[in-house]
Length: 251
Image (tube, rainbow, N blue to C red; front, side):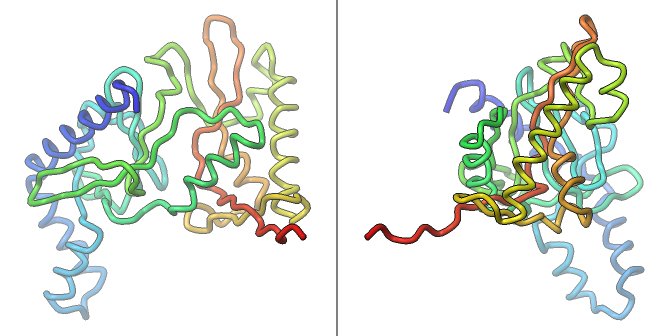
């Protein structure tokens, strides 16, 4: 692993350790939410939900917050990387995050298959999070958090969900549209069980939409404001799960 990635891991540890100390009233507010949501549950059951999945809390005004989506939160990790994990809920001043097993282990294989298919896959690492009494450690090989390359490249680019207007307003919009059509065609072939080597499932944990929308949501448009050009980049990779078909043994 390169030194920059190791630095990003240490940066994430520092953020999580700091936020644990600054969680303030968030656990009590979350407990109150759970009591209202599950009025028939005992205090022991509420305790289990509080501890289940190692809930932790991140201030909504924390300086590293990049964006908060429907399912994920994205944090800046120094100059070159961002961190992503799933949202579990929120209180008035905090996001409730989750250091449980939130990404599918087979997603590591999905990354390798996307590369074999010829897609440009940005540097992307699934890591584990251990919390021992508020002492957070980031470990290789887990699936609780994603550390990925910062697609804004330290603010040089805008990174947006793929939008139809990009195809009309960007100088190379027609080329981008065709790239998305070609990428979707490749993924659709696998989804329809027509590829000799690979198969696919839509990750229902992420989206209830059909495959075409799932494919679209995997990509972002990386926009260069100086040239008004865009680049189609993979960014949200867990909308589909790719795996290898079992191969018949050679005779």
